[in-house]
Every structure is written in C-alpha cells, then in structure tokens.
Length: 105
Image 1 (cartoon, rainbow, N blue to C red):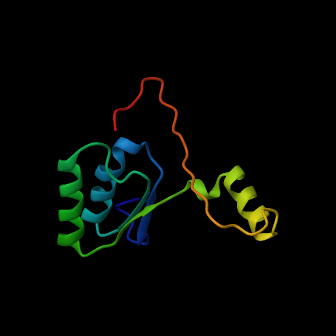
Image 2 (image 1 turned 90 degrees about the vertical axis):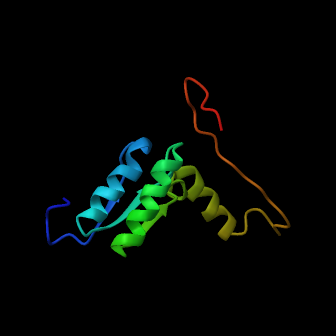
C-alpha cells in the first residue's frame, strides 16, 4: 500500500505494538496515516520518533477511537438519543481490555 501512488492515506488496524512503526512507514512513503488506539505501545522512544516523523514530513497522523462503533456502545447511544435514560445529569464510563497477564499501567 505504501508504494501505491493512488493511495493518499492508510488506516492501520494492525496489532497495537506495531501502530507507531507502521504509521512512520506510511508517512515516510508520503501517506497520511491513522491508527486505532494506542498510537504508541509503552515506548517513549517510539512516541518521539512518531512525533519527529509527523514534524519532518508535514503529513497528518490521526489516532482513532474505534470502540464507539462496537455494538453495545452504538446501542446505548441510540437509546440515549431516543430519550430512554431521562434527563442525564452526570455520567462516567470506562472499558476494560482483557489481558491474560495484566499489563502494568
């Protein structure tokens, strides 16, 4: 894809640890790049390299939150828009990523 001149941008839905490397590969070939979260997987060096690549190339890097399209999230958004929850005063939320071995954060 990075060698195809008819492609302007690439969305990276690869494994999370590869997002920064793949984004830099795309931008170094003149393509805008976007990835699912996270942009960087636990490496400040990767974060700095990604930032440097964006700065040097002048191309756009975008990090997309993809969970908004999951069926349960979409269903709750539809219910909210339909007024199913009444007047919403305050809410918080988070989601949990399962790892067989906990990932320190």
